[in-house]
Image (cartoon, rainbow, N blue to C red; front, top):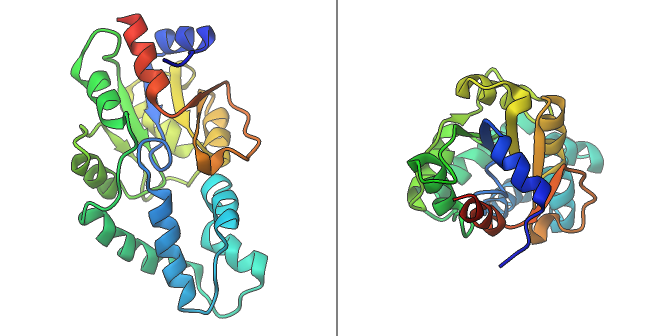
Length: 229
């Protein structure tokens, strides 16, 4: 049994909606992103160091363009890199090779099925393609809430995706509680006027991230819901 901050219990109780990030929060997908981006850059003779990827891609959100800029790589088109990566990543998703984290499926089930202590508007706000988010959830036995993202919305750290999720759920942004794991996501949620719960995992453990609340994994949220039931 873990200890849940009393302030987080209050914030969860008062939240009109819960908005999840996906990669690194519900899905253990970052290793697959690293693998597939690594495959694409390897075609150009470039290796992405793991620590650099976790910091500058996963947490800061600089992506392929940032990698090319930091290393002065010539003749590599970041748009073409992204297109090649997502095609390969799509294969892994459809093969069921991108797992959910422990607790993700029961947490979504409780929020969406109306059990006491849960049952409130819930969405996923992610830079990842919505159809792939849905495919990973279904493969992991989880229900699929509204998934917000895609064309027409600026990527995190812009607040667009979180604001669009609040509109989709018909709640004021200040009444939504965001569950995130990255610097870019925290910045996006804060800019949108939303409180943020940081989920700590091994990949983001060494980064100085400033959120309203902090938990390790998803189990504390399930325990919080048990306490409120």
